[in-house]
Length: 106
Length: 499
Image (cartoon, rainbow over all chains, first blue to last red; front, side):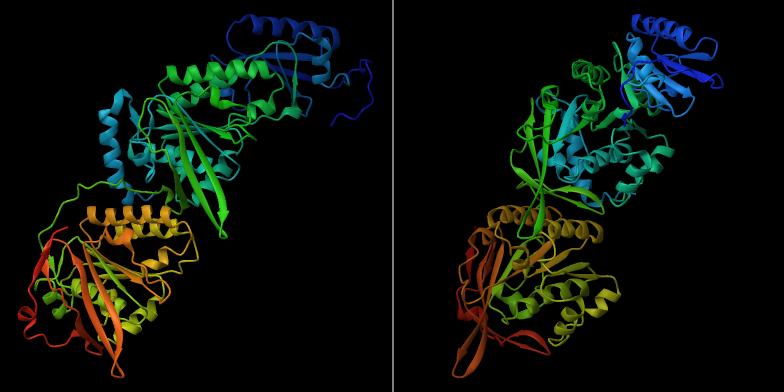
């Protein structure tokens, strides 16, 4: 799938794109707060002013888990721009998150 | 909906066993024909069971049946978590078994959750757990008040997620979670190269492991089921054949072997007065099993058909299982000996089932016989010939199945006649089978003075005095008739053979 040449260059973000991110968590766990903090930091760095984060607590809304096929937590879903992408974990590696969001090729 | 006619007896017994919780371990009846018998009551209640086998061996179908029967027969709602098939695919696949999954979903008795994991779409970074899966399971279980749950197949987690350490830790937590909620769970797993499951799921499931297998021999596929392990419970240890039919899964033997069937003192006519006379003047015992042996053309079918005809004349129902001729052929040929079976089929007193024995494995015929008998509720059954059921090499295995079939018929109080064909080169006696029979009639065709003499001889007849002489009989358009026996009683000293 990923056949593009290896490059560590940060792509120039498309200013027209509206970034809608959804972070699925289960309650106020350490992993959830780490993931949210990591995500905010990365977005502020690379998507300043063009993103929106929606946090979904599945403990409160369990019925929402099936829709985005959530299994692991925390899971970050890029709702927009399409196609939808998923990153699981506490988002500790900025590089992996950028690759996952398709902001950077791996 | 799922037909349960033949399983009712087994199910009731299973419930009784479950209630008693034999050996202290509570059982959860599956309602699957035969399974509750070999597992002495079903699956361990409130515990996980591992169901493993290679692709296409019937794991998913068996698991679905466990849930559907749970909802239909035991008022135990269930959850099906599918890691492979989507809900519509699953519903489509089980429809051929007569299970309407959507109907149970609509009635909120079964919840289906398709958990799709697409590794190529997922990036992993940092720590995570599978709490999302637990939340979904919990949600599904609560939505229907589930007592049963199926996870089909959990191994998808290993191929979908790269961090095996996390997956293993979470699996351990999952099995504890299932136990804490007292869910009777079925976890399916794909057969590994030299382990029960490819990812070693067996190490998490300590209570019950069931292995399914299918193999081809003599161009006939046979499916086998074996309970590898069942902690704290008695269970059958053999490999049992099982079938997937339009009524779901049937594990053979469908019934257990017991010797506690009711004995009937009532006598019924053989349909031939002379033969009644030979049997102490009263005919067979009702509910007994009768073996009719002889070479080709000795009149076995006619004698059996007379029994059937006599039953229909009394207004009772009967079934003929014909393994040599088509239905119309059976009816036509018997008309030549004065038996009009057509009128009984019209009156819905008689069913004739014809099948080529080679068409399916013998198990399928036996299951079909169980189903037909369960549906039609006959008082007389005639199997013509029994050889049709024993053409394969697996003679010993077959015999044990036949034993149980005979047993099943006895338990239902059904009078059952079996014809057995002997050709010149197989004149050996059916020792194994004859011991199960209460009555054994031997027919012969002998040439004497350029004439064929047909004779009938009672090899044995338990519990009654009977003729010990070889009698001559005629087979004509007037039927099966013994030569006049004016002094039948005088000609021989009746003896009583009590076996």
